[in-house]
Image 1 (tube, helix red, strand yellow):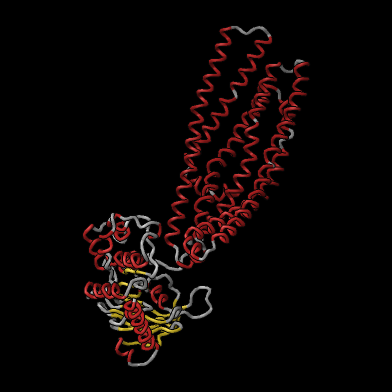
Image 2 (tube, rainbow, N blue to C red):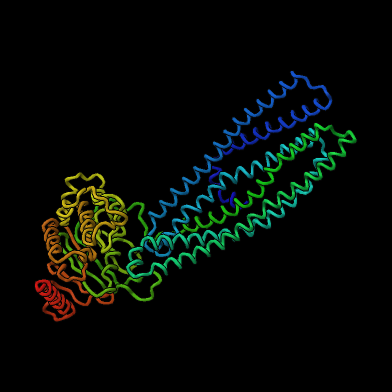
Length: 586
């Protein structure tokens, strides 16, 4: 019964709804007592040759009335109980989705997408069954079973009733024993489903890579192995689950045998009439559902209990990013002063950033370059407040960024990573996602600034072109430029381009940077890039190495130091010239 205690908060919230449902069940059970008694009287009338046409019509009328009343009472309890279960699922689903929206990067590094989807589907359905079928099984087993037993004892014979229910305690013992095993088995089953869901999601998302590397057969074999493992686990659950029905059938069969033997003796000795025996057998048949309900109840509870624990484990996770309840509501604007003495990623032994500091006045551009893994993207993540566990302080507009309310702070930043996520809709809606109220003219202007308008015009459907899942129908350069247009649409105080021009050619890159310089004369921009031509016109350039600033200055200053920047710039220029020569030679 622990799952009912865990859901007590909801039952208290919806007590009126469930009270109506239980009253409906009670009325249904009471009315259900009437037809077997009437049928027994009809049998006695026929056996005693006292039945008349008038009495037969009257009995049939009362049976019909009972059926109509049962129809109405069944509608009442079904609407109340199943409606309550659906409402619980709605509450938990909304709560879980809101929780996902609030969680930070650490959470999504711990839980994979497929696992989260399994919690939001199978687990919530199992909990919903507790609030629907579980309540029905629990209440109906008591109400229908109780009223039927009372009718059997009061209207037929109490000694026959006691003999018929004598095997019933065996059911409680079997249900308790199997319930414990099903709880553990179902927890393993849900975990296996989560792993399988992860595998399917990753394979579908990475299908292009799988095919490109010729790993189709290997991936199918791995999937088949996980499916087989999941089926094996579920077979164990089904084996345990299947033991309930035979146990209940055996108990009911024993009761039927005892009823027929003793009931026959009672009839022959005129303790009860043959009509009483017919009524008693009908009542005993009515006990079949409550008995099955008890078995199903343990199954439903154990499945729901395991799923509820899994969902609560997710909801118990806390974000590391604290949004101040009384945080600054103003939009940050002005100088960005960045000082991080040290930052370590969670579960990472080495320091990712050390002694990184810079001051970026409004209207200036900062370039950040360095080898792969040098810490360029890490600087951006701290500005975006993906992590707050750093030693130091980041000031924007004269205030610590942690003092701003997230709803005021983040909308002032336009962030474009190397791989931007695109939604499965058209180009227009993907650009306008940043500001849903934007007009068509504003969307087209943003596309022009990112040098995408010309290519959109060549598409048959123009801005109505569907981009496909994650933008699969667009090239890498088109996806990056669409993401830049989306960021520019909000006119951010701070624009961050995190290697966001890596997929475009040098000519397009120069065009975009020229547009940005003109457009954002009074706005702040940070450009992180591997191609140094992207940052050569920045007001200041930071060169990172192993999480530290190893060089800094303007392009001309860095070219005069004969350090990593100068060597890499000349190497890239040489590569560009060689590629140009090869192209011209062709």
